[in-house]
Length: 144
Image (cartoon, rainbow, N blue to C red; front, side, top):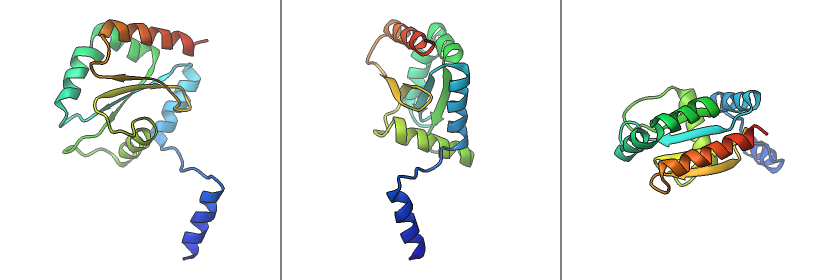
């Protein structure tokens, strides 16, 4: 009972749960390198659409180069059969709560170092060429 009271008092003061280590590392790297964070939400061992999106969009040379070189790129994987390390699961769940509350797969979200969303890419919503243009604009915006 005392614990419940203490928790409600802390909640009243607006104390937030701490950021998992991997997510905190993304934030720090984003600040240090002055790059936005790109989080790709997928289900690697169950989502066929995720595999198709990755192959036909994210792994195309121009998009892959932008994501790997001009953003802090992270895959938030939600497998059904494979087991992930506890810290990876915690970080992925934290990122999903902040950036993908609808649980959409596949989804690519671009954020700043505070995890404020700058752009969301849903599969099939735009062409790869349009995506390249948006990523280039985001890259330029972040570096100012």
